[in-house]
Picture (cartoon, rainbow, N blue to C red):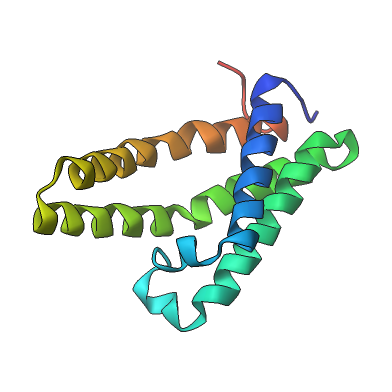
Length: 133
């Protein structure tokens, strides 16, 4: 049975917000598209943004919550390589610049990576596919 609680609503808000930013400022995300996919950067950023908005909106509607939860989990796993690419890029920049700001940005991208797991779990929980802990 699909479920909704604060984590589902929060995930929906996060996905919708991120999706809107993808559409309004695609250049922010183009640099983190992994190298093998860079020939279609802008298109991939737009598609991922639209998918984030659809998944987030679907989580808010009881009738579509199960499918949206499963799709959200899949999307979060699918964008993980972009998040890894972002960390790699920030790590290179931090080594090159050696500034506090560049090191902090790198640390932030590293800290973000494990956060994908609770987001995936929240999506699966919303879909009724994971037990609540």
